[in-house]
Length: 179
Image (cartoon, rainbow, N blue to C red; front, top):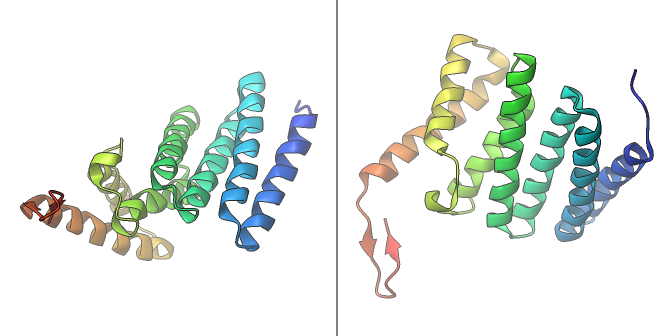
């Protein structure tokens, strides 16, 4: 039997506040509200140890990562998206079913930090190439027309990673490396 607590109220309100602040163009303040939501859900998960709370925790961590990216904190975004991916992995292992929409959205946001945010691969703690390849293999085994856009995007990103790996780095006058 599920027990409804004050943490549930506070987590819900923090999530609503984060969404309002995001829509008002205040991603940093929205990230603070989402961090509170994540922390409250983490307490709830610790107290109850339920798979549903683990999925909620992954969702809050993913949303926090996106908000941090919007506010310009790409490194913080990467750490939160890595946390979300770890929670998704734990949820999938626990339930023996894929967290497909959330997992795909989280991987998309994580990869976008590199491809659109220009965060170097060395700043990512997870192997992006390995993650993209694993998801593409899963999508090939379980084809769905609804996921064809994701499949195309992830295929393109995997090809770009292969090109980046094959392109030698060169030093700029400031001493930084460029491709």
